[in-house]
Length: 365
Image (cartoon, rainbow, N blue to C red; front, side, top):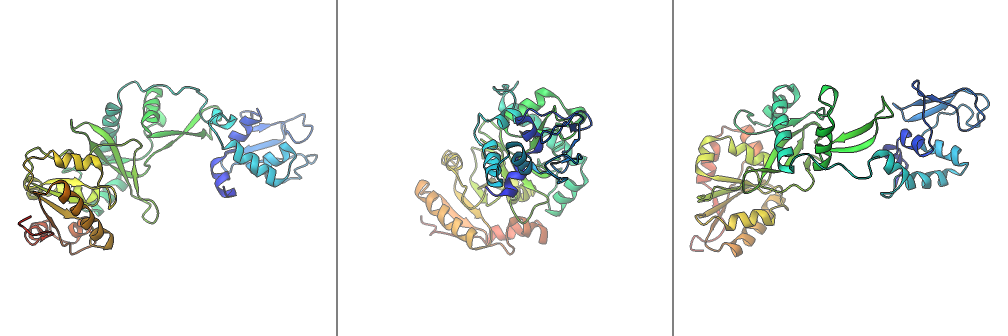
């Protein structure tokens, strides 16, 4: 583990808690590094540092980060202090873990996972109407929140007047919140890190049309990780296909599926399904396809790149072996993907692309 990683994960409040040191309400305490009769060590939670103002202190007026603090408290070398910091970030039974999550047994959620996800997705959908950044991003992607179900996570649902223990416990249970050190403004209070902050959100549904998973797409980070699936998510997007489906379009991403879902002429004639990426057309999806007794054709609308082409070939062959009576075809997109095609053209282009689709095997298959 790199030093930067340690400092990003091990907070000063954790270290103080480990050594049973508690600052007063002015965030001062008797310095543990010298004989201190009046509080001379100032704690700065904003910068995760401490500073002793006494000239008698062995820290010699140096600002202390978490590793420096351990070094002076243990009277050890820097290498030993780093090892101790890593130890504090370790196993489930360490003192730090007890500080981060002081309750030895997490509270059980008050309602079912499906109900928690339904409630939170409703909240996320309502948040779109109150967030200009969310509205701008959704519009930028060519999506229409009045035609599809889309939410936005400001990560503020557990703050201020909305702060309520039952809500927090429920969100921790499903992974929408995770204990994350202590509150910088109130060291006595647990802090939480929200999952999918500043992301638009889509619901994944099971066979009964209940929400069993959530997908988040970052609106701010387009260079690193952009896609986030809530832990233990199952279900299909936008839902399990209608049992009477005859023609099904499979796209590479949820945003691509949402792009087609809002086009009335497409949604009326075809069922839609997202593969969650080039490597995530999973067993739940394949099982759902095998149940479609009226299914005649599967149309792939994967990205117009090497990875999309390879995935189309892979999955068409896999599904042909599973469903030998089905016709397989693909859309030849003029842009990188379905969403970019929607942004660059009128929606009617997809009707043209469907008419000109390429069949992957002989029609006599």
